[in-house]
Amino acid sequence: MSLFDDTVLVLKGCEDQTELCQIYLDHLAAHPDGLWKACGDGHITASALVVDPGRGRVLLTLHKKLRMWLQMGGHCEPEDATLAQAALREGTEESGIPGLSLLPGGPVRLDRHLTPCAWHLDVQYAAIAPPGAVEAISDESLDLRWFAYDEVGGVADDSVVRLLEATRARL
Image (cartoon, rainbow, N blue to C red):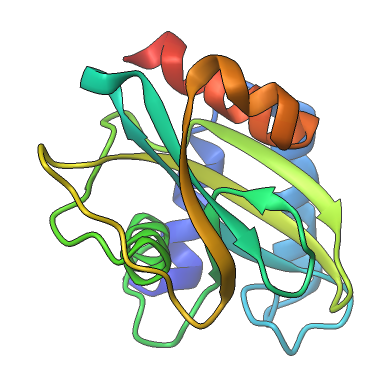
């Protein structure tokens, strides 16, 4: 199965945010290249909110280009076999933490937002950090920091807060 086909199946399985899910599906139907950064009309992205439930904290990255505290995530790559693998790859690359595992049950949320390159139609997962995880900053980040759940609203935008709330509801 191709990444495109996997993405369509994931989106067709969305039970929440059905209107936004349909926007994503319509985008893919109109743009066979809608998974890739080269699609100027927008593209599907995959992200992972890295959480440490045992310590009640979340790892955020201070994005180098956007200069905002965000979850790990970004563009799909040709080597990604599934959307979940893309999110896990992004989470691992940007956090520097090996051994992350995605929260079962598929994506936690969808979030559509305009970036300097195009509209990002983000499919958001949550990744659980293993015990004793130590982060390592990547070249895509200005900073990387753990925040207590109740601190996130003071540093991140509403989309990250909503993602954390939805993640915590699943934990």
